[in-house]
Image (tube, rainbow over all chains, first blue to last red; front, top):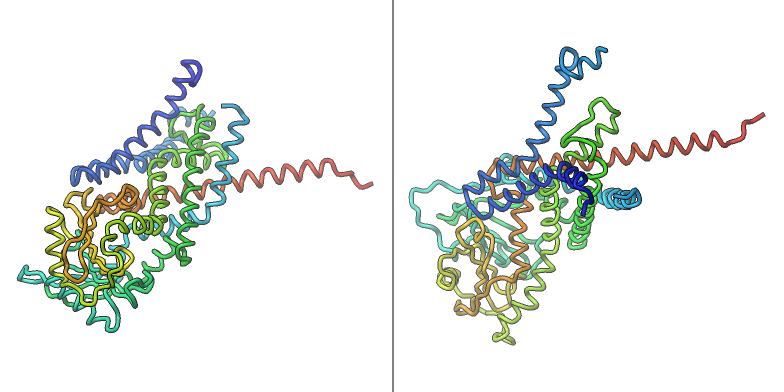
Length: 80
Length: 378
């Protein structure tokens, strides 16, 4: 469907995380409905996973900005 | 993916999003406080609280119905309901007529033990927010219109997923090109937040669409299933003297063992026939508590007339409601629901910004080209 193995690998690389997050979300939404209290705990983690990804990205960017002037790959690139 | 295919999906994504943007923003902004409507009502003093009692003997359903009619002289009972999450309260719906419009109904809470009036329910600022969210004060037409906007939202989401591939295939997941232009940065955020929230947004969007069809589904059920259930009673006049509600509750519970009464519709109301009480029974698990089972009872004698499971489309409607409201997983799930709602607002807002930025760029490029072609005055 996606041509060469390279292309398939690329497709998986691009969509693996979104598919996993979507599967987690759906599992959580149904878990709270079907499994009572235990399902609620599952839902908090799995439905909350996309929010955690966004928070993690924000934190990563903020940390990058803090590190930027002094150290690391980005810092040196800018000093040059 | 060929450039022409990308362009085609891009047009679909742009226009389905643009057409629905304003309404989706309205839905997201009004949906946000609605996630916490119980807490907000409590905070503002619009949530009646049950009294503290030493005895656990509950008031009879008939006593609550009598108290509701005494509190609203000249009107009639439509429904009486028992909320699983608020066992100390019984809710009574009164209206000008048995088939009166929902907007004309008055909902009052009564203490489950003393049958004392605790106050009105569904009033205050959250009612305005709810009306804006469900039909924009435009009745059934407003509901169906918002449903159509929900469908456009679903198409925008699917086309967005298709476009995620050409826009991000050269980037690692969750890459935000922070040193690029503001437009590129927002494109990355739009793609990231859009793709991580795709399942939740589709579920909430589509269950919202299903909810806008609730009245149509109910009418279909009345015209088919309910009509066949009450066929043996065709031609019988509406009951002159209603059976005791206590008797109705006892018989309904006997007809549906292991189930509890969620609400009772009085004869002539939209949820039943002109001759029958309809007791809607619920189970005791998270799922079966949502899947109601109607038991029809003769309005005069209180005898059970028929009981059938609801058809699949009404079961789908009942299941879709918690999946839309997010009120079935405790406070943490509500907070997550609100956070996902805010993220959806960011996706919609950033999409609008990206479209405006591209439109401005194209307009200025066209103006430059025009200026270059224009003859220079001598």
